Image (cartoon, rainbow, N blue to C red; front, side, top):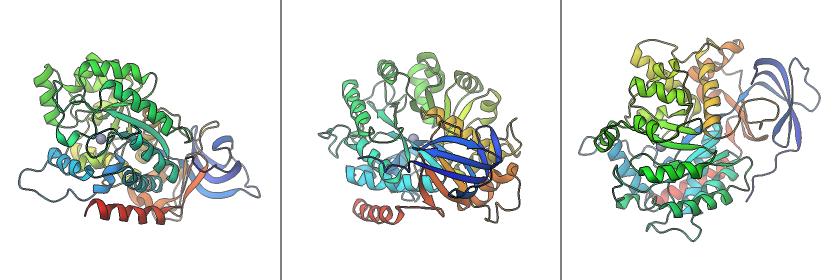
Length: 459
Ligand SMILES: [Zn+2]
């Protein structure tokens, strides 16, 4: 299994482009073997150049559970009791009961295709569905990792695979429950999984393997220490402080809040991505921001699950880095994640343009740039349009009514707040064009197979 070879060498002329150094006009990109070999600005287009009106960098999606795309919209009916994250989790456990590696490939391919169409060019897959339906390891313990890698190869999306270590059902090393049987490892088994995961992604361009302790409730302190060593210099992701019940359980167990506990008991630094980190005191927020860790924010899922709002004002005041993720994949859209991130803060503070920063007055551009930088850090890669980097890029349709007649300083505002993904024309990942006119090249076949898979899973 290997991704299709990109064209050896080609040139793209963009009327406008958002490069690492800022906006430029009449930009020629020379792309060789997937990477940017040369950038010239103020350049006339030449014969053979592919012409585009505007090119911006593709965005890393730092947090996803691809299989959950299959249950999008299936947990939106009110049950008998108060619905919450925890009742949603019961629906999710039932949904994944029957999923095979082939099913996971089909569902993950649909998710990855939609990510690419919406402007995401790399997937950070927080992957915890490891074993067969009885909870036994497959003959190849990394078979489900391979299914994710197959979906990445088929769609062309970049992959940072984060195999999840999951051992307990609650703080204090509680025994896992029946719904969790497909997730569970001991540390030796997890080491074998990591080895298999590295082999599974070896045919992909620029793949990264990190690891992810699922949450503080799913690992015990000794295991966490071992996982930090196993991670080496690679990314470490963890779900943290997503729900108030988790904060209360952590307090009851340790006398400390989750983020406070982690900062005191682990070497939290730039390798770490704290997914959600919704419920923090001001002191926790400042300490975590200063650690260099990235906050992994998933506004659509956090709204869908009723998690709460991230303390963005305090985070930005402390210079914290953040990126965005599609998490439950109930709706996959990079621009909508960004829009909702800003709108949540507006609704909460009754103010506007809260995520604009000192570098630009454009809120859309500030969120795009922060998501690019924070997402790349969290996924263990370098991103952005600069010589030597992968050509992971998105072209915009400047004829779209929400993108026409404006200067560069308002283009990403138009995309994020007005056109949404409809303003996206083409997408390239590692120099390979995978989306044209907003459609992935393999869309029809991927959707057909996904429908057949869902018919069976939902029967
Ligand atoms: Zn998650």
